[in-house]
Image (cartoon, rainbow, N blue to C red):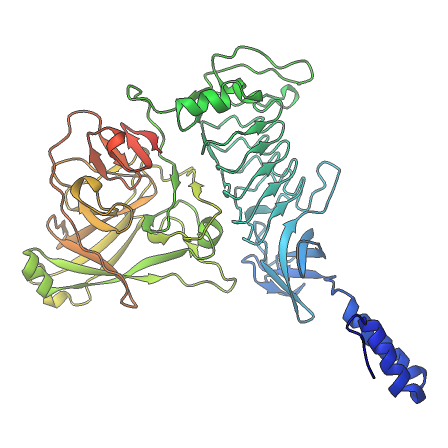
Length: 567
């Protein structure tokens, strides 16, 4: 039998039936028809899936079953699906506070599906997938999701925190409107478009970073965000902004955004992108107009303004906005953080687990030398790497991460230094070899101090080498300690103390390694006179001295507490 290359699967099967199975009758024809159908019909997902409060898949009705998700197919790719429905399971053993974890993958009948959307395609306000769900307290959106549809989390009144994955490009109308308890949201740099009423009435948010690629913003953008005080407009791209972005709604007793600083990277960018760019001019305190009658409130400038960095400007920037780069650094946050969701699939976290005394190095350096060993945090049953609240870690972002390059964490508590609560302490494994004390411990501490923590004598900070001292900037990390000048540790970062018989050792030297033997870094003590005038710091808290930005490499710096950008 000769078959043309252009023959279809259907033609091939019918030829086989005609020439080889003519005598078997209708039964074989039916068998071949079934085979043909299986070859040409796309598999479809069609059932509910149920999960525990930690995001592990389980069965409906069993202990710890917390919620169910319903999925439908979409056309994003092969076996891609959308979160289309949600139900809370009435199980007495489940806490009323739902910690919703959207899965990356769903397995049904032996096939694996990838979740790429959260959207029930509603056109009716308040009818989104999770709309008006009062039990949801936190949400983790995986890195596979590209789209969050309209009204998805509309009026989730008790939603406090949401982590958005590093592939998200579009958020629909009203998606987070009336999430009145939402304290923080970190927008990935992949995000390009947000619809109307994006954060309308999210009146607990104090700071927001608009990533560089978010260029299309709908109406009523920050409508009623009355606690918002800092908005960081990253990058130099032109942004379109819809109508009534900061206007109040009188019938709901909402206040407009007021007393808020909108940070741009330079005065030139302000003039080119914001001063006369559609509705962005309504931020500027020099603008005195009101919205027209189609708005149910009026806009008044209560101190809203743009700011950028000038040599004579002494304005202090609240240091709660940091870009994370693909290198090991330190981190301590007031709430749990999903490392992969915030910093990319390849991000890692490590926690201090042991230390040992090095006799040979101590004799060579004429100071007690200690190796600190860290253990990588392993993924949980759901593949998540979690940094626990109030716990200091080493953190490394995914070098290929194109998503959440920025993180804003607003803490309602622990806004002052609380050593005992935010620390990890380990003893020296070979303490008997250390002749300097009867008992030595290493303590790693996190700080939430507003404005940064000033390093004290006998305390150490793990950071980039300082370019002013011949270091290879932004490539290697090393230990620093207080020298003849001040050193400030930014909020949510960490420092170390070596405690010998109850007192801090001011002369110890440290190195960092991992339990598998990789990586080690020694201490470097810096000597430089105390600056008299404006001091320049990098975001790792290192003082770069008194110098013009023209002498520094491109990056973000703090000058007299104010963020400055060098291009």
